[in-house]
Each structure stands twice: as C-alpha cells, then as structure tokens.
Length: 175
Length: 332
Figure 1 (cartoon, chains in turn red, brown):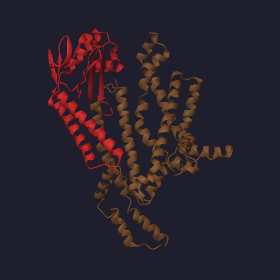
Figure 2: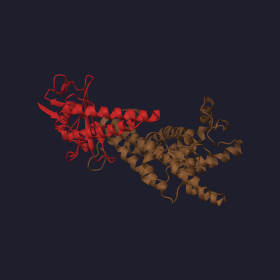
Figure 3: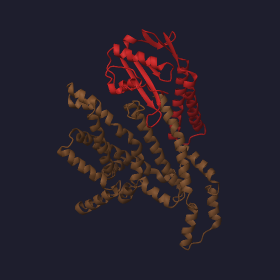
Figure 4: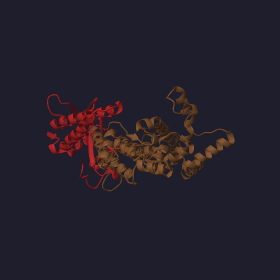
C-alpha cells in the first residue's frame, strides 16, 4: 500500500493564485460597479477564484491511497475505485506555455460512474500512472490517442501505443 | 481544467495592464492634446480662442494633470465600464460608440461564422480529393481570395452592383433606420445588408483557412494511425471524422485569437469604402483628432478581443488536443 499527498510546495502556488484572483475581483466589486455587465463579470470571476481556493484546500487535506486491488481517497468517506472495475482512463496534459514545453498532467479514472482525478503535482504520480496503465492493459480498455501518447511520454506502455510514442527517457518536468 | 482556467485568467491581467499602459503612452506620444489640435484648427480658420475657456476645459477633463494620474483615472473608469469622455463629440464614449460596437460585433461574428462554414467543407473536400479537378479549382479560387485586398473587392462589388443592377449595396441598414432604436424591422434590415460586408471581409480569411485546413488534414491522412484504421476496414468517413479531422481542427481553434481583432481592425478600410457604421472609421477619426479617450477605448476593445480570443483558443485547444510536447520537439 502507498499513500500519496499534495505537498505544501505543490499547492502553495495555487493558494497564491486563488488569493490574488479573489482579491483582485472582489476588490473590483467592492469599489462599486455602475453597470450590470462589469458586476456580472467580476462576480463570476470572484466565484471562480473562491471555488478554486476551496478545491486547493480540499486537495491539500486529501491523501490518495493505492493498493494492489484499488485506488481511492484515504479516509472513511473517501471514494475507492477497484483496479478491476476501472472502465475509463484519461491522461491529459495542460500546458503552461504556448509551445507546450511545460505544464502538468491530470489523470482521470472512472469506474461505474465514479470519477477520481489526480494531478501530476501529487508526490509519487509516476507510480499512480503506472497503476492506471497496468489497469488499462488488464481491463483491455480502448484509450484515446492523446492518453496513449501521454502515457508513452511517461515511459509507460498501454494498449495501442506505437513504438514511436515511447521516448528514450522519461519526461523530467511534470509540474 | 479549473486550475488551467484560473492560470489563464490570471495571466490575462498583466497582459491587459501592460497593453493599456502602452496604448495610453502611444496615444499621448504626439505633441499636444485634443485641445491643442482644436485651438490650432480654430486659429487656422481665423477664429478667436478664449484661453480662459480652454484652460477651464483642460482642468475639467484632467488634461492638466500628470500623465500617470490621467492613466489611473482612465483605467479605473474602464474597469467599471466607464470608457471616458469624447472631446470631439462632447459626449461620454459609451454614448458615442453606442450602436457601433453592437454592429461591429454582429459583422465580426457573422464574418467568423462565414469563414468557418465555407472553409471547413471546402478544406476537407480539397484534402480528401487531392489533385482532383475541384481541388485545383478551389485552390485557384482560394489563391484569388488571398491575393485580392478586401477593400478592392468591396469597390468592385459596389461598382458591379451599381452598374449592372442599379442598386447601392453600401451601408449596413436602410437609411431610415440609422440612429434609430433597435426594432425587429431594423434587425431585418441589418441582416438583409449583412451578407455583402461579410463576404467582402471574410473572403481572404476563408481562403487562408482552406489552405491551412487542407495542409493539416493532408499531414494527418498520411499518418500511421489513419492508414492502419483504413487497412483494418474502417470506412473512409468514419476513419476521417474519428481522429484526423479532430486533429486538423487545431488551426480553426488556434486562429480564434487572431481572428477576433483582425476582423474588427482589418475591416476599417472596407468600412470606409462601404460606409459601414462600425467602429473602424470612428477609430481612424479619433486617432487623427487625438480624441484620446475615444481612441484609447477602441484600442483597448481590440486588445481585450485579442486576449479573450487567445484565451478561448487555449481553452479549446486544451480540450481538443491535451498532448504533451516531448523534448524532441514534435507534439506527441
């Protein structure tokens, strides 16, 4: 069994983003908007930043537990997805630069309508991704080309992966 | 996706702040201000200038204050939806632009839709029927579209419609609706007049988009995954729609960023030629007369359109093709 968490350094920047955006937008609202359109825009953005900060706080407290049989959120009320039950795996890359040279990945696992999303900023993400790739192999899942290529970039073999998708070395920077 | 949205929205803030500062500096760069130009104009006409009155107006509109104070007041107003005051029209900018912004938005959106609706099927057809008769014909028409400047096409159309049919196709609505409030009749009149400027402004964009879509789709159609899918017996259209078409949509999506402001600013000459009541001609006048808040508001409008366009294209690209780029250089 292994336990994975979002460390402080991984979420500190997100806290800062949430706070900066919230202060900017709420500040805009506080100075008073004479018309409806700016009020709606600033109100919507404030809500978005509050939501983001709350999600960051939840992630910070959350721990992902992985065993040979299942993966899930640690704790009594946390959702657990059995590896054998997983029916969809998606691995997406979100670029922080226009040339896509830097960014982070999000792994989304689905099993019977339940969904678990894990960012690559969590410690031990490679191990989690390895478990997901193995589950995709074992469950004979048809992965989309994007997910296949992204697993290939991590050096993991999944169904449908062409030899040219396998890099010689694993990608070093993932958020 | 939420994290991505937040990062992208936050990155828009410094971009817009820097752009607004640059716009303000550039507008202020020529010597003097609107009132100096106004005084010079009066003096050239031999009219007397009441310096006291000019001083009063300068103080009233804050033109005697330091540049940074003027900038902060302007940007503070913009955030609250107050675009400032137009000296030339002696009205708030919001009232001066009035209908023009909505008409510009209608023309721009219709043009973008026209570009996509026309170029998408033609681009796909050209790629799937490479070197066919229609591919050559469409390619030829595409090159014509790229080569002919929009304002020239507008002039040709105006001349042709007048000489052959005896009708004027200029303007964006029947003269009776100009400066009238929006009614169902006015909307119908705008829609009836809309197709000419849309075709004129959209032709070069359509031609460019067809070329890019054709080239991208041809690249995808030669890749192994498509050849394998076809070899396994997947019907042509299903194999095409499943992946190559989706990948070749990237230029459509990534073009949104440049298309929005391009359609607005690129249509200036066409608007002048075709007497369209859009923002372009007004921006030209505002820049000529140093009507700084009017010109600044227009330029900020273009900057906001660019930033929003790039934001939308980034979000759509992240949804369409969230693949990593390896150090080797190629997008994987």
